[in-house]
Image 1: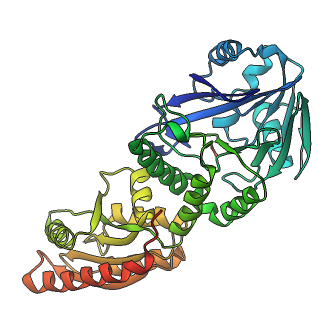
Image 2: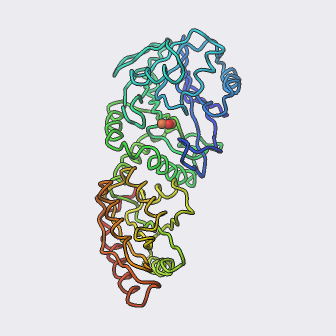
Image 3: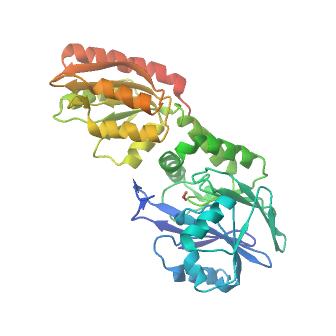
Length: 408
Ligand code: FEO
């Protein structure tokens, strides 16, 4: 666990977590940080906690003492969001201190009571404040469905710091550099992709609500954005606001100037055409990423398709339907409400077709509204005439995807 001073009277505690499936399902290749913030006036508040999984409160308390905070003197636990990655330590805290007040929204209060049995709760609404003394005044701003329905921003007026919880967060473990102005260019790129991974894996279903949260952030004068996961933005908080604005457009079909090849193959027939397509993309100078299912994780698959302006689906027919690992991937993208992508599909069949029918059913059922270039299906191995058709459609995709490109 690391301790950092954010501003006078405000500290951050952060720890990296590696060996977990986030939400019990997302295999996060590069881990995640859990950030907690302590605001000290005459009274002391802690915003979110950092010991969700290890259950070792002593680690937290030792670190608090090292920044001059006696855990027994903490007056307020501010729960920006009840999901246990932020609140899992509350019951442990009760073991060392009885008289603290939990501050949260009405929706969080219900869950705090049901998950932890806590009842000393002050419910806050838009614009309510908490004066900690010594100039530190916190205000509270619900941002429902920034992930869960209970979420709120906490804003510190003196330093103009926005404690944004999941909003403006990223996956990815932090090394020595936790502030935007300390990050190397490689770390900036790393956290941009980990931000995309976070947004696409965890948040994208709630894109309309995230847009409202972006607008709410714009109504506050912000010097620092301090999220629950990932780096703190103190030099240029606008960068992460702009990133999240762009990510919200990726959810609806825009993307980087790159192609995702989402593919699977039983006996290598569809794979032959994938190799051919790679050659075309290389020749045309188009960046691409291959996602082979089921080998690749859902986390990587969702993030890669989400950020791409063009999607090539390469999958055969399997038992009269779409190759199941690719069908499952597309269903997951549909559940995540990733809509409006430009796509092209090809694939092999043996006994008969059927993949295309299921592809259409998945698109319909999930209201994905993807824009498809006419598919190419071939019997057995791809022949010369199949490859010619595939090449023409890939070139069409490259041309059309220019309208979808949205880069930083
Ligand atoms: Fe940081 Fe919604 O979890």
